Length: 149
Image (cartoon, rainbow, N blue to C red; front, side, top):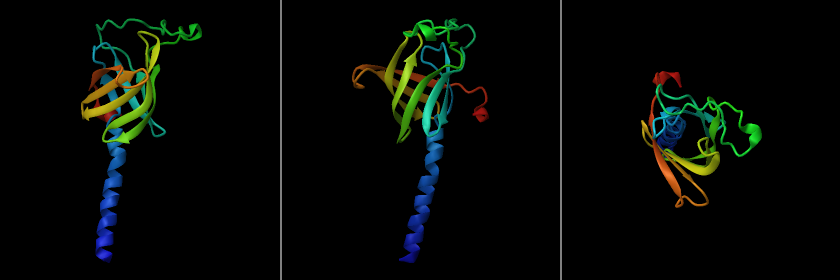
């Protein structure tokens, strides 16, 4: 019986030890579906955040400021480095929920979920009210140096 308890405890340690690695698998630089911007995703205090990390050379994203923001006082903010994803809680199995995403192309903020489909594919679903009324995008990992996270 004692041996069984130790084996069970060891198995729990292995499982719980793998959780942080599972959560951090989402960290990195991601290329948006339309390929006009990079988003840097990081874990901050147990929640997921994403900020604009520039645009690939030759992409159509040439705007420098947050000119479509509904708050006139924020329209002078630089887009590069702007946090656009906040508040995501880990739900297990590579899924994040209860976050919001700000779309600098429209100035609107949406409820959002994030799902890591595989090591290099991320599904972003923004919606109003319920997820049924939303839109999904697929982002691809685009780390220049995977060890730089």
